[in-house]
Image 1 (cartoon, rainbow over the protein chains, first blue to last red):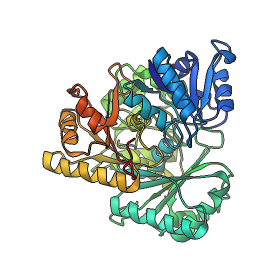
Image 2: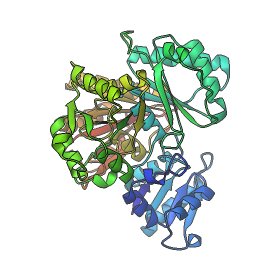
Image 3: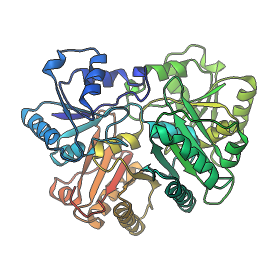
Image 4: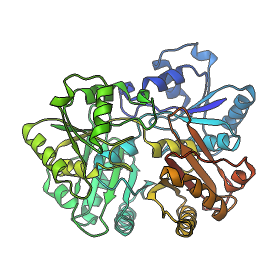
Length: 239
Length: 239
């Protein structure tokens, strides 16, 4: 019995970013633990069905009380039935739910097979030109301006102290505020990155020092999820 | 003009982990900046050649003096010629060379397009069941036992303090020592993960508390590159 970690496209019309071997494995499964059943059914259906959707199991992860998903997983282990784990977009368990089920599988000695697919964090880091030998992902920062300003300065200082790229994500409607506060708060030679709609038709990735952001034509960010990156070299040298 | 970040398989016979759209883009290019020319030529050839290899440019990244790669990149920008950036295995710029060229491209306003492919760090994190909402990659730890012991205890403490999965990598011939020192030094309820030959025929990923490692049949790690992960919950709760 195997737990497969199934990637899901992160942009619209981007099924081409899922390698065919991962699609084939997902098509062969009939038991899924998912972030949201409705969209997971839609995704699995889009791969081309091997058996009717009604004969498949889709159980949602519930981060407060995950007993239903856990029970489904335990039953599958007993029955020797392979399980697929998937989130709404990207890779399950990374900036997305799913780690609890993976942890159960690991403890139970179940084989866990992660499949290759798109991760907005990884792709943003690759395209940033920042330090990829040392980096940290911090989830979401504070939602309000004064606390966000403090968080951004803290990440800048951590980056310099540990020579570490600092990453975070933000919800669509706050992306523009994050950019504004970063331009206000960060030092001129700190590199700041924004990545939106990665792998999509409107992919937009810019990663330049704050000084260059200020010289560039101001941009209103799309109301879309964004990955942000902050990097300040230890030496204080310009990148 | 576009700089494409081209993924390379991380295991033997794993070309299936590169999505066909990425293969198609790579096949259309004739100018490459690479970690090692010999293996890069071999990889590009394996994709099926559109034009003779001799008519293509392969320039190596040199982290001490990168002037040749930089000059090649500048010439390509002037000529409006697309460039592919690739490392020996995995994703360029993440735990691998390449970030310097990406940074040049970003500063020059050149479009940077990261292509989806395998990353041992991301896949190991997915399969670990550890915290994927907060994590850090630390590159290599100290090569000698006493310093390695100290580094591991420091990562354990950082993990608990920041509720952050701590990742690092090690060269093939030191993997076994890392496992031994971790079992000696880390606390019983700290989760420790090892991932080897990800996406390969001998894929092996185990991520369980130190206590469980000690109960399990001792394993001699392969002399192969490994990703290691350490996670200790802030609350001290067992995972």
